[in-house]
Image (tube, rainbow, N blue to C red; front, top):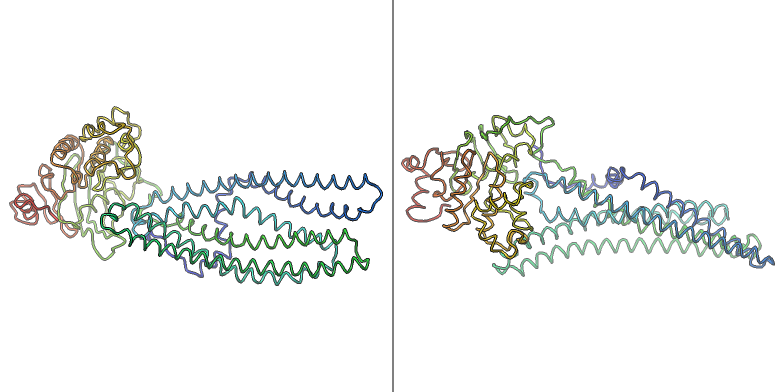
Length: 599
């Protein structure tokens, strides 16, 4: 079975991918926008060409400073101004096209990555923090935006100017050009040597940024617990440590890049000064005109500027290559749960028959601990079955496998006789309604939170579901009633109120299979009775699976399944199981006699 986690890429594999060009992975996102790319390339080529023409006009002006024909000189100046105007227009057009292309491509990448990670099974999130995933979607795509929207176009422009300038330098003075070319190897060596070091540091920097985002996300999502246990200073210290490691990697990357920039610029401009010295001697000896020397110097500066810019951009490209790798890892990560190539169809109408056939399962993060050990279970359509047992017995695992968040290691889980792994997940999940132990409340209105169960439901249906879940009264007491914003993770609500919102959501879904995972665990006695009546009514004609610690909520179930250490140890009605004097009887005595909650 494939591991759903992002595996670290070995250094030699990463180095190889860099040599081949990790940025090639961006091509599928660029390909749909060939027109934009072509237009941007034309504008870029035009501006580079105009830049290379400008020194020719300057040469004419310089060589004709002493001419008696003032009109001729005026025409040369006018031509120079015209070229400058064309350059300005072309540069503005290039910027607009390239920036739009960058924003469009990055938006597509963000959507593609989110579309992928939102479908990955829970096993993926067992070994990677949500904050790190968010860092990749935000920070890494921002780096790519800077490359597509700026760096690549600047690199291409400078590359064209470098090549074109070198050719025109050769035509201006082959002698001086040959001397300039002697400097090129001295410039390339530090770029290659220090660039390799920058690649490693760029990746390390991005990894630490992602780690700090993951750390911050975890702490902020549990900020009340952090504060309740006066853990602020420890959390602050842990975040500071990760952030400082990120800064240290960035500091070393910046220093390496600064070294490379200093070396390249010094070598380039030292060479220019030397060449200019020799050129000045040739002008004094009449071997070349002053205009030709000025033209050569301008081309030399343009070529040198191009090399310097390329060395700067090289570092940005390395950072973007690292960011691209990290995003591609998310796009290509293998999941443990996938839809079949040719999914079967569920028989219509869906009856809600559930079957476990000799199911063995261990969570990927705990492969040596069996969560389910040879479980076989058959639930008839419309039957209400309660699953009870101590913590860690495998009760919630039953619920998770019915939803196919995981696949069994051995055996199979079926709905209406069809194995879940032969169905598309959407095809059967739309027939399930879930009330989880920890209800999820979104940062939206109460109405939208309930409507999450069925997005096309009317306001009247939403309110009817809320009434059935005993949630109508507290919702109408909120400042804006059903339109009240509930805050991130429902911070405006109590635990019991969150649970009733989740129950209303499941009622609204109106699915043939109802899954209740400790659905009334956070309710007070009065609310529990009201919700229990709603659940009893809702379960009529539906297959209902109730996972519970509190046995008072399962006494009316058609059948009670008792689990312990991943196995079914007893099955029967409440009175029958109590009479057997087994695990269930012991749990019942603890709750009904001593009033102690089962563990």
